Image 1 (cartoon, rainbow, N blue to C red):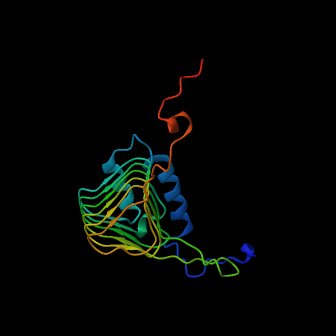
Image 2 (cartoon, rainbow, N blue to C red):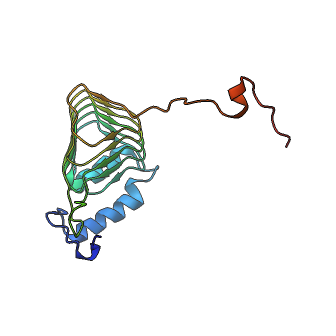
Image 3 (cartoon, helix red, strand yellow):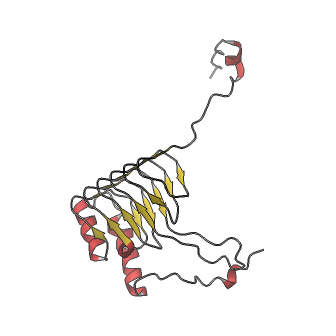
Length: 191
């Protein structure tokens, strides 16, 4: 049984004073995530809060970035609609890399065996020319090598060498249902 009241967050540094954190959360929620905010304004806001964003980076609407001052996006990269970068620790995204829609990049975790469930965080590095496809998840401490493909809904929990493909399990037909199992299509029920 865990005693979450004893949690201290040892070793976790938010990186900015509380007033900056609060201002960031307000700006992100009211401007940065909105569809009407132009991508160039998004990158300017992120840079103003300490993100290192190189030239020609496209960040779409609906993106959530926990702490911009712990983010480095290299040139010519894209961050898709609805992506969530939960960067309690630094995240680096390489050149010409695409994070597709609803990607989840999470540097945070907890020590399950610790009585107070303390943090077990780790930085994430995504290499150059990678594609992290829709709804893929990249967990803490992972490094994804250059020229890698992480398929839709794949879960990456350990580092991936350059040139790799990580694909989620595909759904397979395991049999037939109802009338289809007899080789005929059932009639439509009356309305």
